[in-house]
Length: 330
Image (cartoon, rainbow, N blue to C red; front, side):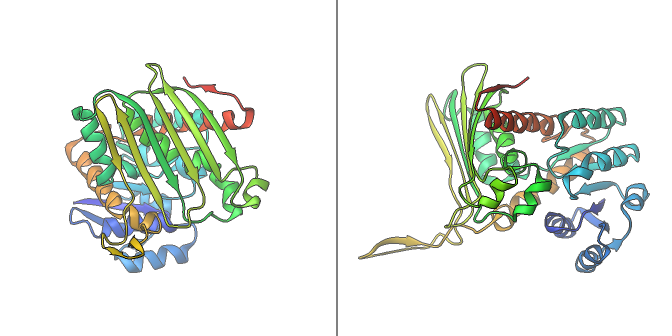
């Protein structure tokens, strides 16, 4: 039984806390949040106790820390938890600074801590199946990976100020997925971006519509498109074309029921947002983290280096969009 402390009681913290509380191999011991009322509400729902973040990290009754706070606090909390000898699952990204991530990972390595980064989409049954079949060779050598990710509606413009922008906040999931599927690092990134959905986002210096092309040293290509608007729901699709065929993971609908009549064929809309679409992925993620702790695996995937590489791609895409030029990635 792994005893968890969750730091951060916002939207994603609630998802994780609820998932942990429902896991038979886990116990949610503590919830902490800068807004005590939020922590108290979540603790009451999940049977946990409320404590300050520092108390949770130092508690002898906690084995693992789940970090779901705003991004600027991630690296500091990871380091504190590592020094306290805790296993750590941190929401993405580790930091908006590559240098800060490197410094943080040095602390993790020095303390031999177990660190997993919350790229939950790797644990989605559909996407995980695509990756497994790629490794099995079902489509032969990969030639091009295409990833589509569209939110149903844009976030508030003031969210952009702290998020780091679309490439670092939204598309970073897709950068990680592209690496996960390709199995090879990307060496060049070319990005285009526009503010077509909400001009207030553009006024904050960000984009809400973007396309990125990436290439590996061997010439394999990935194409990622993101939008902050999809009137039909949460659009999450993957297509991998190889020398011997193609694998595709399609959208998930509320039900699989279709109506066929004289007007054509119709069905239910796709699931509306990430809470529904990735519920199973979050559960699988917690299971994988617990398994890593129980087995003594201090380097689970996605780990710190995966977080670092995804951030490098996000930084390169941001610079490419700003300069209008392809950017090399080390």
